[in-house]
Image 1 (cartoon, rainbow, N blue to C red):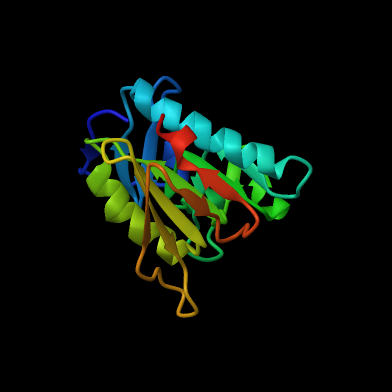
Image 2 (image 1 turned 45 degrees about the vertical axis):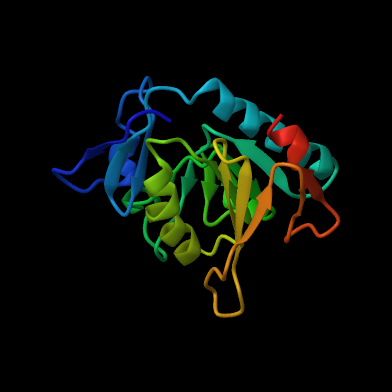
Amino acid sequence: MGPLAEKLDELYTYGDYLKWHDDERWELINGVAYNMSPAPSRRHQQITTELTRQFATYLLDKPCQVYPAPFDVRLPEADENISDITTVVQPDISIICDPDKLDDAGCIGAPDLIVEVLSPSTSRKDHKEKFFCYEHAGVKEYWLADPLANTVTVFKRGADNRYGRPDVYGGEETVVVGIFPDLEIDLVLVFR
C-alpha cells in the first residue's frame, strides 16, 4: 500500500464507497476513508502470495476459504443496513470459515483470521486502527507480517474477547495457526 491519504472532511458509508471510481482502492474504518494507492511493493506481494499459498494448500477440500486482497470485508456494528456500514477493509489475507458470511461482494462480518503485511506508510494504521477494529469485530487471529524485520506477530482473542499478549515469530521459525492447530506456516519460505 502506498502513502496513506485520509479524507477527513466527512464520514463515509459502504453506500458511498460503492459509488467511488473502480480505479482507486479505498478502505473505510469507522467512516474515515483511507486511500490505498499506489500498489504494494514487490516484496509485500511475495510475502502475501507465499502466505496465501500455504493457507490455500492446507484449506484444499476444507470448508474454510482464503482470500487475498483486493477483497472487501464489511464489518457491521450491529444489524445495520449493508449500505450504512462504516467499516470496509481489504486485508492482505482473509480466512473465512462461515460460508454464510460470504456473498458476491466479499465478506460481511469478521473473518476468522486476518493477515496484514506491513508497509512503511500503513504500519501505524495496521498496528492501531485495524488492531482495534479487528478486535472489536471478533476476528479470532490477527497477524502482522513485517517484511523489514522478517517477523510475524500473532494476536489471538482470549476468553475476554480481547487480543492478549502477542506471539512473535522470526524468519526461520514455523507458526502454528491457532484456528488450525495442525497447520504450521513455514516462515523460511515466507521471507526468502
